[in-house]
Image 1 (cartoon, rainbow, N blue to C red):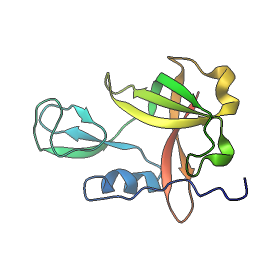
Image 2 (spheres, helix red, strand yellow; image 1 turned 90 degrees about the vertical axis):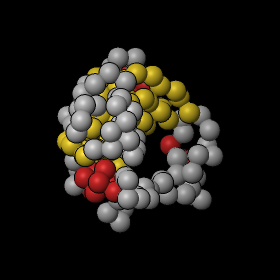
Image 3 (tube, rainbow, N blue to C red; image 1 turned 45 degrees about the vertical axis):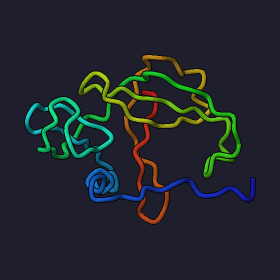
Image 4 (cartoon, rainbow, N blue to C red; image 1 turned 120 degrees about the vertical axis):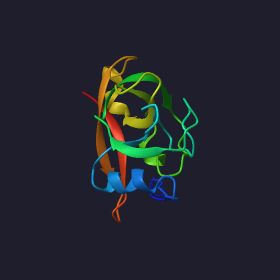
Length: 138
């Protein structure tokens, strides 16, 4: 489609800036509570587990498993018009149960797609120094 829009790029704020700065360096970091060691994602002001506000960003492995997925057929998702159909996945990271991140896969991965499939983080360059973590099936 010739009038396809560019894929969305992050708009960091004070809370999410460390995540996006690490992504530009092709590193995956997540917010972790200094009080109870619980990972929180997306970033927040207080820990989901203990409500502490002592949160810092730490590197994580970037490994996980597909928790669930959906195949998107709409051709009106801004930036993804020419890629439809594509696959949205929810990844559960190995660092802790219920630590989820979202990603998308090209439809060419459909034959390998299954709940529980192992994935690893990769980094997609969206231009102008904007890098977005994405997951791919191992």
